[in-house]
Length: 187
Image 1 (cartoon, rainbow, N blue to C red):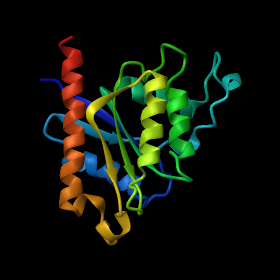
Image 2: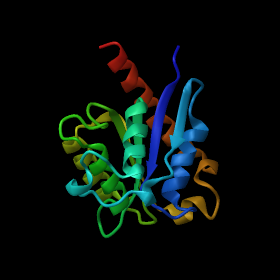
Image 3: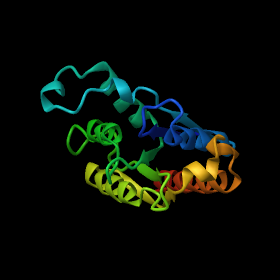
Image 4: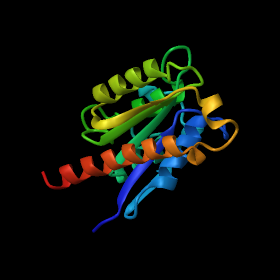
């Protein structure tokens, strides 16, 4: 059986961000036969500009597109900034959606996890990210959304992977992505 490759894109650039921790949690809890890689180059990608997206594409944007194309599924982890997804994650979606109709996200299984210190759990960011992915051509899988709230109190300075309930929930999201890739393989 082939290895299932999941690419995780954390929507915060801060090294200790909860979004990054949740992406790392997905890698830590992935079952045998599943590799979750956390993409580290989002800070280097310029804002999407069609003038830059021609014969030559900025190297960082090309690396993102290649990583998305090579993955069997994508996990997006977003904080909520001012009531919506982070600009860095939205920019990644924009680059991965191009060229129009044939972008790396096209028909790719995608899961979205939002996180926030508030009880709202960044649900607005989750909804906006799901919407952007759908318009970009990705397929948000059933069971592939998770909103994690009250993160400051929940993790209390520890890594998210050490919180049993959250690790289990992230594991279920990864499983939903794996199941979606199997459906595509058998279609």
